[in-house]
Image (cartoon, rainbow, N blue to C red; front, side):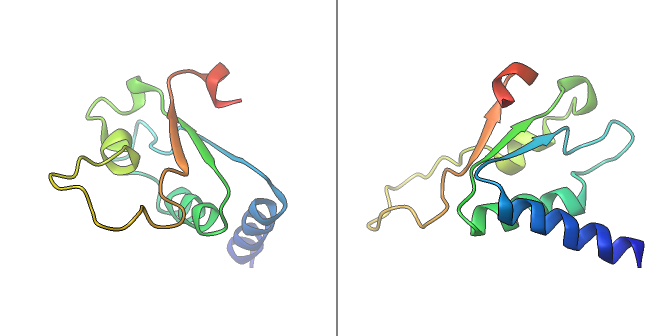
Length: 99
């Protein structure tokens, strides 16, 4: 039940927040971004909460976090405006910037 309680608590905290900070969504001993943190970031974006991410480069030498959350370069400009929530994830360069 702890796993369920933690999940509900985290989502409730996002619901109560106006902004979300994610610190090191990729840990140095893992090959990928934490699935639960990725889910929480996606939940926050769907709830229109801006998410500020700081990833220490020493824990992500392959730059997985910027590749996953960074801006994409479209070859052609889309006919429609960006969808709601686009641009809600902001990569920061320092701990000070995240706050």
